[in-house]
Image (cartoon, rainbow, N blue to C red):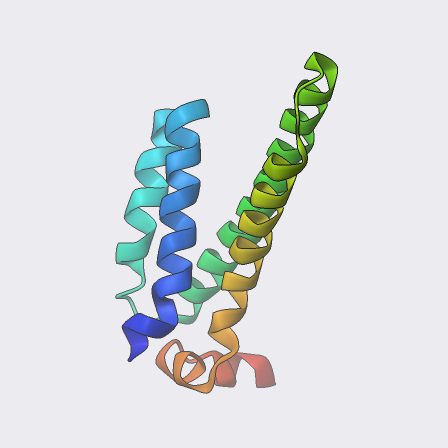
Length: 117
């Protein structure tokens, strides 16, 4: 059951890694491909690190959206479908950070205790 709760996180990290495989440094691809394995470590810092990466990933998708839309507009090509797809990907990636708010994952990563401090 924990795997199903973490599936959006894993998918978001892998899709972000695929993005960098096409347009970024290969070291980021390796880091993003390895981050899902870090989810086996039941520590608070793991959940927080993954959340930060997902939020930064959503920002990267938004940045990419604006760049590609501007490029398409400049060339006079259609851009609405591109904007819709990348917007949904950015939203999915950002919302994936919220899965750690579930009670099962808060218990697994000891997040309930860290919120009280």
